[in-house]
Image (tube, rainbow, N blue to C red; front, side, top):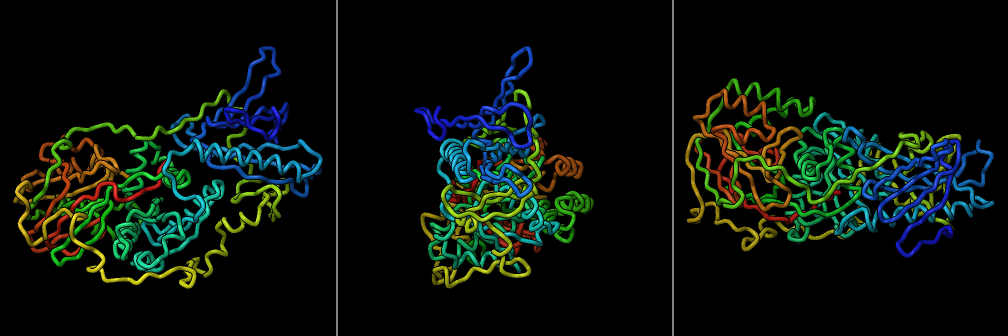
Length: 567
């Protein structure tokens, strides 16, 4: 087959030596199924060593040149990056680097390497990700809360996320938030046309800010559908965990990596949201949960222990069981008849996650040290800049890649906080929240001061908790709604009344793994709207883990009104 040309079924095949590998060259093929690397054995059996990396595991390809200590200065290199599942079911990093020694000059060999880079990108973008996708021609805006949870979100970005984004050539700007409501203020006036989506690296609180900033815009109906990505960086990571559960991804092995790969793949999946209304007339947008009682008490009161991460929830659970509270309230709700069940249901993800077949291992599992910092692209025929990755290899970097990669220069301040230059963005007039949020078909609830409709049910009792989740998890280890999926149009309401004994409550808190729905006294009901009217004087009422004023509140699901980045 002629090098650099594709056949009728679209493939590219050639023979290359692998970087720092001895022996015969490997045959390499890229097509719509992925990357295949093989080499016939020289043994008597004549067996073939073969590695197959599925297209859905590939994330990118970068081009490089020989370093100053390499006598063969005419060589070019290309490295293919992937994150397949290993034998233990965890995603691991794989970098396959190949020497291009086809021509006499580096420029000619670089052209060959770039042909392979383009082919890998074609495979990824045409066959590796389902449509619709984020707009790859625009940058993402990554928002990081440096104080979320244990306070390590920014360090995790530098250590893990920046490298993965670099391999996948995900162009992005970074803003490190400086104060509470910083993100909310920013997105209210930001020119959304500049970006392809927001990526939130924090706990769930920063995403709450972002959604309510979008709700405060004059174009809120369109703005709340702006693509969102989530990477766990705090102590409450309910949405990130829920997405991984839905996609059957190995979240607990490496939560940051699994979530960052969702951004890299960039498929847009619909996401249920909910509109919340308080007795004062305030409306807010919610993406995760609303509730009062035991779970909310633990969530809000354990904030003083945020430095220990999600372990704070277990510690505070012990205190709350010892001093169990009960709350008198009236709960009204509109049931979704077809989805009300206390049984555990195994969810089949809408996407089949990929697995890589290895027969047998033929290359180093780890990426060569000399390639670990590569972040940007190269294009044949353009001017390139380079920097040392090791004495052996130098990554080729074009002017385009310098614009697309995120470097420390993009932070512009010593505290790494990037200010959005308002002269470079169109600023829209920020009308008041009351003007921006209209009643009508978007909010299918009566006014909070009016009686509930006849088709609603009402329960008045003492409650230990009422907690409503729109997704399967409200934190990494609290699997509250086993049947929930991100776009099922349901809010899953768990109720436990005051007559439930402490032993049952202890069993519940120690086993919020899905089995709790079969515990006597635990009710799980699928609803599309509800109203909570507390009679007890004080308590913790939370939305997405954020404390809101105690008092009457109601909520209605907005099915699929959000968009979230997934595999």
